[in-house]
Each structure stands twice: as structure tokens, then as C-alpha cells.
Length: 99
Image (cartoon, rainbow, N blue to C red; front, side, top):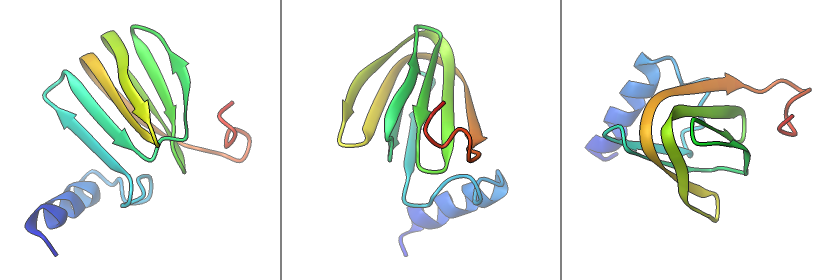
């Protein structure tokens, strides 16, 4: 296993994200200006201050200022802007369809 994979596993475990984030999903935050998410099924909500993404087992909410989706292709989303917070919300049966 590559060293970077071991580091990612330790971070997920330390932040207790193992139960929330599928290890096959990839979330990359570069500084506070660029976020890339792989494994996105659809964009649930979009504004300059908040973007909600539907992933397999959770909803990812990105908060900030001047947010915009720079790209969305084949399950990969890139969000640019001033990112101030990320929130992972587990999905219940009622909101699995994104509602």
C-alpha cells in the first residue's frame, strides 16, 4: 500500500469518518479555495454561500463565499471559492433520494 493511502486511512480513522465516507470516494481540499469530490451522484442545492452534494451514503454540505461549481463530470465535482466549512450528514431512509 502506498504511503499516501496509509495517511488517508489514518486521517479518516482519526476524524472518525470511516463509517461516513466510503474509502473509494475521494475528497481533496487544496487550501481553502478548491475542493474536488469524486463519487457525487448529484448536486442537491447550489448558491454562492452553500452547495449540497449527494454522495452514496451521505450528503456533503460546503459553506463559504463566492462558491461555484467549476466542473461536474462523471461523478467528479470541483467547487471553487472561499470555503469555510464542510459538513458530512449521514443519510436516513427518508432522505436517500436527496430530499
